[in-house]
Image (tube, rainbow, N blue to C red; front, side, top):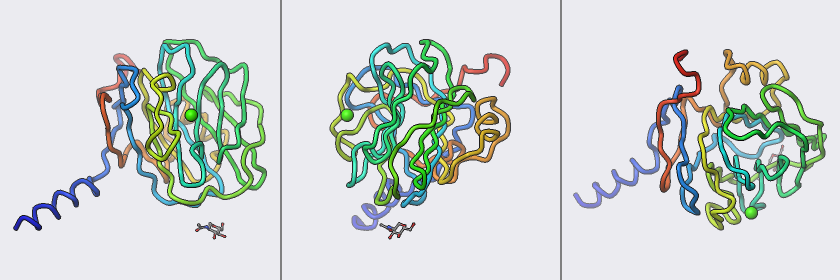
Length: 223
Ligand SMILES: *[C@@H]1O[C@H](CO)[C@@H](O)[C@H](O)[C@H]1NC(C)=O
Ligand SMILES: [Ca+2]
């Protein structure tokens, strides 16, 4: 009986049904080295990828927008802002300068990476950056994906001064490079093909610490 109970608790913890978070946001209301959302990707061993999300913050220091760690690298497919945007692909850093970074504004950001050319690119509100060299090779192994904290170890090594404070929504990841047209559809909130690796409309995630799931205010009256 007791064993059965434990088994069913474990089952619930491991396999909670994915949730449709359409119209919802993750609010990170406090600077900490704990608060985070862990996202469970479908699949592994990626030869290319696109990550898109929307965010709002008033931080003027550096912060992590999307942190991936694996046994191969603590900066596996990661996006950080720190007077410029930094995209990491298996510890290879590509730096993008001069992109808009005004505080207290909703931004849409998409990052693409392709292992053949190694090229990474960032799109802010549907506008492209320069294309820069990143990692040439597969992102294999299990990826641990975290919002709100920057990993210096798999789900660990957090630093409050790199934490994200603000709101994040519409997080999607694909195992291919999205076309410019699809990226602009995402940026403009038109119909787009949801992520096949991470899908905000069927999100498999775990919250740790102060992260609040609430209705989006992003579109005001026009939901
Ligand atoms: C990843 O995929 C490549 C083919 O793209 C394959 O050669 C390699 O063995 C795979 N690695 C793992 C760890 O499965
Ligand atoms: Ca770090």
